[in-house]
Length: 429
Image (cartoon, rainbow, N blue to C red; front, side, top):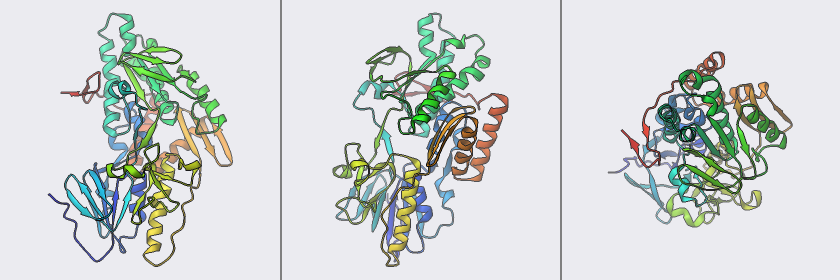
């Protein structure tokens, strides 16, 4: 097998990964001046900030994904191949993929991030994550499957295990999922499962630091903490998870009994294997201020997998979608300038603000010169996320789903599309 990419008289730029960084780069790069080859293991782009809504039944998966070929339909000298890259040979300027070898003139690595379990093997084995669309669908099926099982269990403690959810990590992903589960508990599950006492359902958010949303302002942390408590969510600060055996969560302060531990406590870069000598402690590829990988003249890295060595005492920028998109756009503009003989410009991140939602009429927004929360913040959060979706169809579908949920206090289709084994090792037929 081979990739069947035609050889033409234009420099070939190969981009690995179509997350926010890769998508923005390909959109901005001039395909009249370069042959552009995009590689990804999926044939779609995923809007990751809304994956928690797929996991909680608020949105269907087709609402937040968009076919890559359709995104770049009609782009000149553009080629997409669905494949996995296993190695980079910088001397020969070639990639090893599962469908063949591909030569490049310039390489842009935008492979994103993966879950960091901090070496706790049992959590990696028994816990659940939301780093992919499949994992979000698995989690949705598991949550509903738990309540189906709880219906048939007489032992109260065992039933409560299936109706309790422990979310590790008080960042945006953790608190947004907690808020979505709380809304299910309040508005949906009592109607779906009238035979169960849904009041027994417990939602725990465990955070190792002194406050949730530690990457945002103290005002946002305080308000979001208050929102979570108002929804009946238990928030445990200064609490470190030490182990989990599939039923019992062991921490430095309290222990919790649950069949569902959702891990959102950390991420690390997901570089290509042969780039492992160029990474920092967070497994992120070290680059200069031009996003060029240190020690390489033709290899660049952007997005979560990259770390600009001169930023944040060598730790690089935060792993945010806004950083990834800005880096993708900036690097593409630099390439467009380079081909015309102009100098490249160093990357500088422009912080336009961060935000998080904790459910209906509850959100926090930190802008550079303004911080606010509540209903207005929630509408701002919804509007921005709608506008960031790739296509009008996606925006329309998400808007209709949100409007339906808002006025009917209901959430999507509660479908168990696959039966999940308790250890997450297999998907049962």
